[in-house]
Length: 305
Image (cartoon, rainbow, N blue to C red; front, side, top):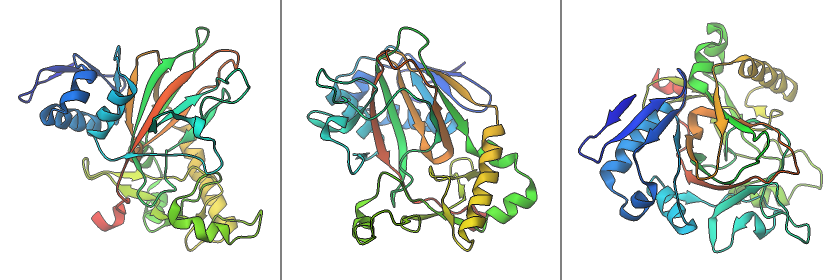
């Protein structure tokens, strides 16, 4: 356990695993949302850069306070599927996406989500400025067998790849298209495509290996869609390499995960992590509030090495 002061009210940090994650205690996020104390925010940001995932328990935030808290760490984004109804977002708070399997009395979902397994992924890589932080705030949790959300450190995954493969990957970039979402910058191109046309070539191109400026380490940066196109390779070659990389990802077992309980707040850095959620009983209610902040285009590790 570490204690952090740095001229601010002290909070404690407890590592949750050797590779990723930390509990942060003795900090009132409602008070921080109001004060936006620069020293506390800086200390928490430094802690997040080190541990990549932070968990705060027993936090009591209104929607406005939740938005204010997230905005202290960066410019908040509104992520929404192009075909989704406005019900996926909390009324009056477009920054807060509701992640839930719950439906209204008329059968309409109150949010964006379900109860089936949510596989390993990173949020918002289809954006020219990809998502940096994701904030997940537990509002309701299943009473029976609640699902765990797991996290993976992609710098550690990169370190375990064969050297011949990392050397090859360092020169490659991948197009981050999305099956369901697209940034406004690509709307005209996508609208011009015939219905059902392949759109894997439309989206931002990012390095497969990015630099973590905080640690100086290389980190894999994989698109959510596994059928992505890798620049300079054919479609078949792209899929073969993507399948190989996901084989290494899924074989990596130094992950950490836990249930996001009521009043738990998880914050994680999408730049260098993957996350997934277990399936759960669809008859059980699960509700999260979800906010993201805007990041920067990835820096290729090859430029720093």
